[in-house]
Length: 292
Ligand code: PAF
Image 1: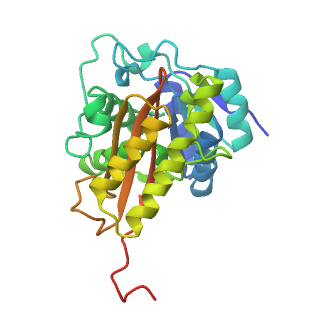
Image 2 (image 1 turned 135 degrees about the vertical axis):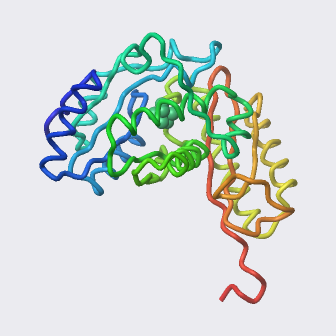
């Protein structure tokens, strides 16, 4: 188990990548903001199955945090992250300083409209612009064959797929399944903020969403199920509830009264000062007589 090479400048990153390219290696990228947990490591392992060399980036991207958000208290542990990445098979950790990514005079913003407008985009208007800008930069800095993103941030995954298609960036985007704690709570670096009582309430979110999925797949009405899930989150102590929404799985457009194509249920809600998000797939209800 070898610790990854740690590189802080784009020039040094490209020098290593050039050597790998000359050797004919396939390169995978896993962008992260650090504070790594098993969810991130599963993405690194997934990247490894598609690549000969895996790069993880560690950059707490200021452009995706609003002034009132948790940029300053976002958990940081580079040494711990490097040790975890070694165990997952990462070859290179790219950990630039903000001035390397956004030098004085930086004036470009990447914006993806449509899929980023609603849900997270409505609650955090700066967020997807910041994500799209930094991910575009990371993809162009590394020019990997594949880049892996978690389904935990489902809307982000769709925004990045759109970005890559629209800008003709030659990379395959691979989705990694959400990794969960034994009680079903989706792993997140922000779970570290939860007090013990919030931590036990947090696990209700996945239970409530899974119940909603079962009701939707039985043909229940979307509006009623979204409403019931919000009530259940409220009873579990989530406050405020930013959204519970059932949407088209490909582009997050609104559906009719019931699920009639592959869909996703997505939720975001607060426990104290911590904002949690989660989502699950919803399969189309089999047409009557078609469910043999
Ligand atoms: O999902 C994240 O951790 C971040 O949004 C990402 C993709 C690394 C961009 O900063």
